[in-house]
Structure formats: C-alpha cells, structure tokens
Length: 229
Ligand code: OAD
Image (cartoon, rainbow, N blue to C red; front, top):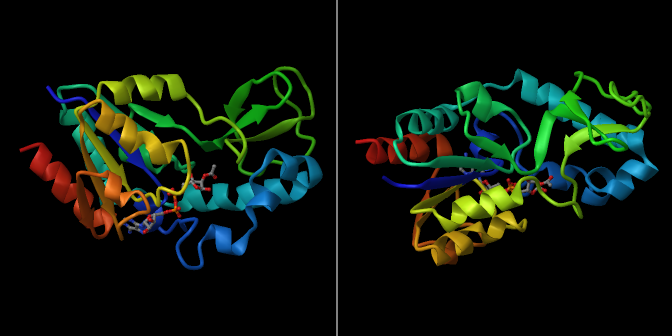
C-alpha cells in the first residue's frame, strides 16, 4: 500500500478558466499583494479587499472542474493506501470533482470567518464590510482566506502525512510560497518518491526526483492512469 500526498496550486485550475497568480497577466500582476492579501490591507481598506474576493468568489462559482481535478478524485476513490490532497487553491473545484480527503491550507472563498470569535460559516456570494458574525454578532467578518503573514491551516496534520509519504506529487504550483514550497523536501526526507507535474519546471524543480512538463488536464489523467493500472 502506498501513502500518497498531493499538493496542488493555481495551475491545476488554469484550464477551468481561473487565473493563476504569477504567470504573465496573473492576479499578482493586476493587484499588489499588500493591497488585497494581507491583514494590514483588510484593516486599511476592507471594502477593496472584500471586492477582490467577491469577484474571485463569483468566478470560482461559475467554474467547473477539468480533467485534472476529476482524475485526482478518481485516484482518491480507487487508492487503497492513505491519500491526502493538500491544495493551496481557494476555489472549490476539487470538491466539485468529487475529492473528499482534502485540506485547503490557504482557506476557501466560499467560507467566512469571524475575526473576533473564530466562528466559520458558508460565505454569502457578496461579503461586505460590517457584516455581523452569525454567532457573536461582531462586525468583524472576513473571507476565510490565509493572507500573507498568517499561518496556513492544519500544518501539523500535513507534516504528519508528509512524514509517512511514499509518493509526493506537486501539480501546477510555482514553488514560490512557503511553507508549501518545502513539502517536497519533507517528503524526500521521509523517503518518498517526488514528482512534479507543471507547465514549466518550477523554481523548486531541482528538488524533485522526477519532473514532467505539460498541461495539467493532460498530464494528471495520464499519471493517474499509470498509477491505477
Ligand atoms: P502561481 O501562479 O505562483 O503558479 C502557478 C503555476 O502553475 C506556474 O508554475 C505555472 O507554470 C503553472 N501552470 C499554469 N498553467 C498550467 C497548466 N495548465 N497546467 C499545469 N501547470 C500550469 O500559483 P501557486 O503556486 O498556486 O497564496 O501560488 C501559491 C500561492 O501564492 C497561492 O495559494 C496564493 C498565492 O499568493 C495566497 O494567496 C496565500
């Protein structure tokens, strides 16, 4: 039995029509991180931050999973060992494809978080400054997104799985953002085979034992087919 850990990034959702962050014309070419993706930005200009995530929430709601998301859901269903899908993506496309053993380490667009009491609930399509928390009524609700300078979710659980991984596969991520960029080193340390599937070799490509270059919608189903033979 193989213990599989998979990490996905924005590249897996690119062919579903959702923009990546660092490719040409990507989200971080259109918006400054410090304006929309930090706790300080939300303190200074909450309306702007809500508008940014409201737009992205609407885009994600319209998007459908592609062949890569569907293949990973199929792998989860057929795999007999342990399986964990860690995504940096805040869209819900893995769930729409049928994935269930999934961690959103950077949060989710369709969830809201109360800054005061920590309560989480399904986000409305449009969130606004001053929306009250359904539990404590504080007017301090925010998108349930991990911003720069904040700790990604469920790191202990993730490191536990990486420490027991036999196979670590990274799909559609530039390897520019830590701690996710270091998962390959953790998995390697545990003795896992490490594979990168990306449109181009990422900045962490040299850390992987195997690198395959191409589109996720082609490469992921091909790799899953090999693996479930
Ligand atoms: P990036 O935009 O940094 O990287 C996307 C990667 O996907 C690039 O290496 C592309 O070459 C690759 N790619 C693009 N299209 C592809 C396709 N069709 N098939 C396969 N690969 C493709 O996005 P992430 O690595 O996900 O965090 O970014 C990591 C984090 O940085 C995000 O979660 C977000 C961002 O700032 C937060 O907002 C906290």
